[in-house]
Length: 227
Ligand SMILES: [Mg+2]
Image (cartoon, rainbow, N blue to C red; front, side, top):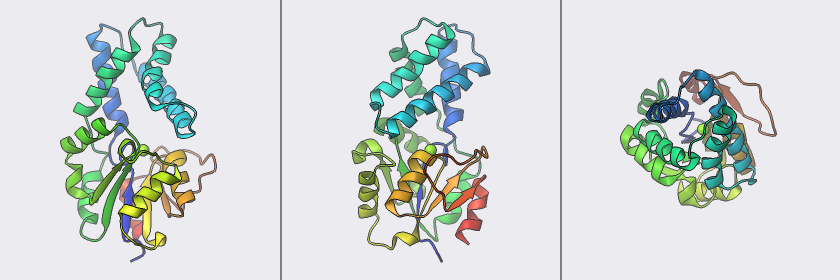
């Protein structure tokens, strides 16, 4: 067996974060009597991704990302609402509606007997802990590393140093990181010297400095990488 320890990203890899975010935004708009269309979520998604990329580059604080995404969205849409209040409700909505990615739960069940499985996730600890409990993700994994609790985030070396120190002595070549973010997951793994599998369900072109060792477009394709 090539790999013994698997590091899975959570949002956008095991959890369909977009599905949860969409539900939460629809609910927030409904509560305020605002009209919602697919355009709203499309714009949110672009704005949110851009801000998290700036966060990963260390250009903006996490707390600013959370509120600014709705400030920019409301600005664009001409909506006069309190972005901070909306963000609070949005985060509660995310906690209440975690949704598994297609096939993710079955995949973990299948891998569990043969591999050590860890979660490596950038996010707010309280939100991630609640969603872990609701999905039962902790039943399938050996440990969970949430950036806020670690005190560093992907792709920072300090984050991966912490993870590697906690998953026990091992040859880095026996570790595989599986994640959907080139700038957080793949770049972080590259710098840490860990093999990386890019989960790319949208078939996006590669960009930036990150170099995935493997690329899959569906979670079902991971078995081919592990074989
Ligand atoms: Mg992700």
